[in-house]
Amino acid sequence: MSYSGGAIKLLQPALEDLPRIGDRVAFLLLDQARVEQGRTGLEAWATRDGEPVRIASPAAQIAVLCLGPGTSITTPAMTTLARSGTVVLFTGADGAITYSSARPLATDGSWATAQARTWADPSLRLTAARRLYQERFPDDPFPDGLALASMRGLEGQRIKHTYRRYATQYKIKNFKRVTLRADDPVNVCLNRANALLYGVALAVTSALGLSPSLGFIHQGATGAFLYDLADVWKPTVSIPAAFEAGSGQNPTAELGRLLRHRIHTHQVLARMFALAQDLVGPARLNADADDRLLNDQGFVPGLINWHLQ
Image (cartoon, rainbow, N blue to C red; front, side, top):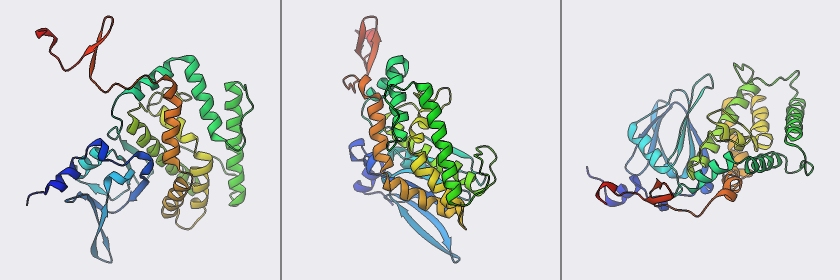
């Protein structure tokens, strides 16, 4: 059976045909399902009351697809997700997370160049780091002129206070934050909620063609810039969602619903996308989508066999 012209166009979308990252659904979680490529989009097949159930999913409308234990996916389906600029997150029963990156939705490399310039310039990087700290607490901003070390200390103090406040609200005694080998419901939910925020951050960085490794506050980790961006929304999104879900009867199911609601309410995708642009924008030069080669005194056009010139 042959594909129609319209179906082929959907399978091979041009960048201008893809939804902007800020207009997409933040994430979709699938578990106990098989994801396949249909004629015009993804199809997730699951079983309900012993009968197969088909769930259609518009790949290009999703920023992050999270596949839980018991889920399988075909190569054609992964190809569609890659062409659509969708980040895929694989999670195991123990909460371990594996990401796949997405196709850049930017038409040139100027944003990546600006990020590298900002990261390498001490003054620009310091300004970006200050902006990130300030963004974390918009209702209680840091005093002007505060040293970065002092901002870091106050930020840690405020996060501890946030944990204590929610632990008191949900009557959790002696709560202690655990990131490795967590076994209590709240910490497990915190780890998963933060991982999903990192997935959203990866969708944003992938859309602009930015490097996840070049962070402004964090340094050394391959996801340093993802941590920079996701940290901004932890106090208002992942932390409250994790405490509420972890205190309920079905933490795993509740976490997805609560986290999606908070990501939507706080417009995390659109605001994170704008923040990433604001952070590196001052170092961005005029966009140049043409391929060029480095020369001794600048650049020369690419896509040319210079031996023949």
